[in-house]
Image (cartoon, rainbow, N blue to C red; front, side):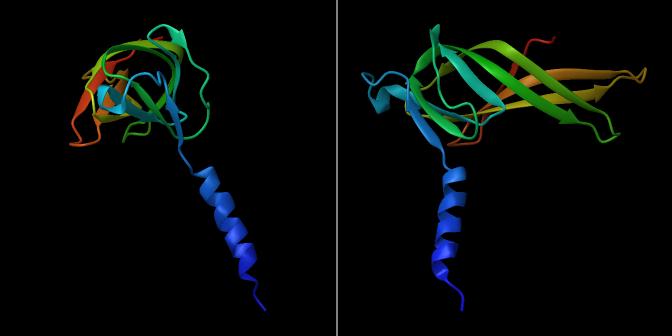
Length: 147
């Protein structure tokens, strides 16, 4: 005989692994004057506007931050793969970006590496960060520091 309580326990364990953690940078700022950014373990935020934060380092997180011009310092891990077989991994533990987040909007941070081949056959690797507006899928591209 099959016992469904074991299935329930397994489902609860899997759902807790996939949950998203939510953090509020400044609780004195209301949600309508804030933006929410989400990221995964490939883009770990270390500082917001020169204030160190100690949020979860693994998995998906959402962060409510003040809207407006914001400075983020983060640890970025990105990969890119080319159709001709080359790949490139980018790691920067102190990447700084500035971005004007709009109040009431939700964004996703998505690091990536563009790989291009030149006429001479040389590969060019360009690490970028997409900041995606989740309401309309518009994305801004920020070029990251090459190392």
